[in-house]
Length: 538
Image (cartoon, rainbow, N blue to C red; front, top):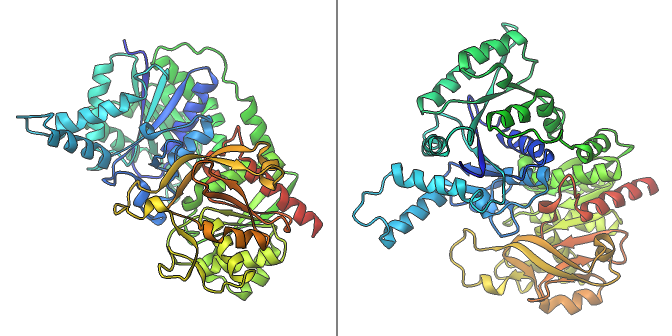
């Protein structure tokens, strides 16, 4: 008998139904019952990781402590479970094929024809079981990206079929997430797409144990009976997932539907205690019943697609609940910032966050926005590129170095206040070669950030190639912008702040990657608090 139990989450009918949220919600319930649970994502694309993908293509790239560039769903897993993920939690087709081809080149399959079955499927099965091998987890939930029937997903589905057979009874189950659309012309919900989706899954040799039905309207008892009968599942295994006002409602909705109970029953696991969701419910209560509100501008160049800044938006939700305020995020496209936007939009806000990004598009708009909030004492938080732009703005407008720039935007700038990191200069490959993952930072005693963190030693996640150019540091500090966070090994400037400003912080790292429901990030909590104070003092 396998010591670790495996749950596979597949999707049908259409993409973007929320497999990640369902997987995270189920994991939350199982964790709240006392089971050690983790989640992994299998992505069917051929990129080795999403690190080289444009945010418009795939939303944000989420970075783990061990430096893996991963799918944004891993952010949901961490925010819900408050448990770190790693490289092993995100597998792509590109990584699978890369590994198999490297083994073939080394001669590991000598004399054999290397094929999708068994070589690719064996590699997938190995990756799926990697997290369960050391006995660290009682349950591993595996979310399979894409939709059943996609050509790209076929090797994963076949690997799951084989694994279900190998694991034996009660050690693996399949949850199929599907859409039950409402046809307004007919005035009814339709089950046929779900029936076809389940049939497609069965044609691949997999029977769905549980159906989770995404719907805009309540499923009637008759409809549930029909789905159970036609899709060959038990009546209690037809779970409704109706549209929610916030993703953080979903664990409670799944609890009410009995999803965790059905799962435990099917895997022959005892129910242990009732799920302890007290802290979760307290967070939800504060989130849904704010006592005040603030308006914070998010200045970026991918603002048309909210998933580009997923972790930042979720961090504002966590920090808002902590402060008992509603954070209204106003998107400001950095490419279109002019005097009108500055005077009529940014002027009315309670705080500005200048977001991360790559490349020169929209850079001048970010600099103009930072100048405005610096001169008008509006709370400011700069993340990664946002911090770098704050340094450029300060050099240009306070030190009067008018051609100050980053070598990312202008490789020939005579005043590179932001420059390519030394270890990056010999790199030719783009994928997975940035400064990635968790790095230590020493914070200056008595600085604003030391008060925010309540400690002088922190570790934060990074994703960048360019850095504050130390040659300009003395000059910049003499003019009033202080480096208050440094990497202890390299001396890399991690944090800058303006002591003369009520609240002005730029960080080279990505605090948003570490904010969770249970532990809202202190920087975001303090930033939202400063926005509230600014609003009340206006």
